[in-house]
Amino acid sequence: MGKRVKKSLVGILSVSFFFCLTVFLIWNSGNGYVNHAKKIGKQIIEKIENYKLVNGKVPDSFIDLGLVPNQQWGGVGTEYMGVNFWYDKVSDNDYDLYFDLSVGEALYYHSCTKEWDIN
Image (cartoon, one colour):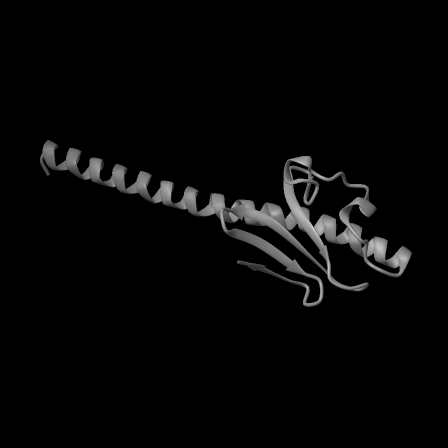
């Protein structure tokens, strides 16, 4: 093989490698935040479930868990360990949590099904 062919081949392989690496990093950065939100969500769920064991019902709001409302959203949501979330009491036994992922997209946890979903 000539020098030009080797240089072209190395260039094409390098560009291909960096393209694949970039796609991989972009794909996993979104999944990384979802996974992080779920990890923090599990800690919040544990707090709620412990509250429920002690009090016989889920908290009326996240304030009952000792968390402070975020005034930026008019006191509706809060932040826990760097993750913004909202809590909705559905009944004395059930609740929903949701975490903002991007404009129009949120990660939800439904205690009645114990499942996560993205809308």
